[in-house]
Length: 149
Image 1: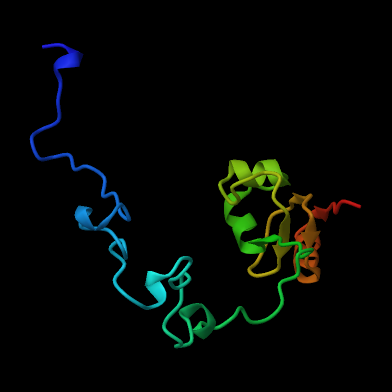
Image 2: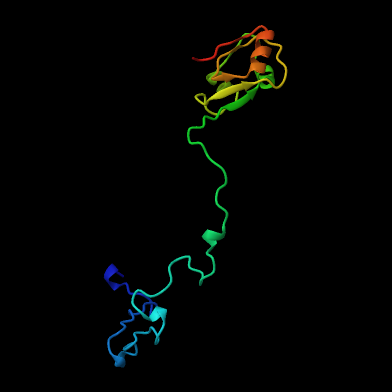
């Protein structure tokens, strides 16, 4: 058997319906479109999403509420209690060390340290933002906060 000998199975292929080629073809005159009506005419038919005059689904659904500021800067929150359990005394808390300890996923993510929990170890915190309560707890434990300019 060669490529030239291959043929489709009997009855699996149909010839194209040639409409509008005379009454003897069986698809003459109206070309299979019936008599009158919207679908019998050139360009006739309904647009996608048309629901027969009923209010379409796209118009019935609620629109997005509120306002989304495209300039919003989001910080990943890290509480003082997480620093207490993950870091040893004297360590530096920055993007690299937070990534290494598994607290954040990307070391270049913006981080804000929040003041939930207690801190007993002296840490040097060098992140993007630190809340006032977190700063007070870090300094009370003997650590220091180095915020970027």
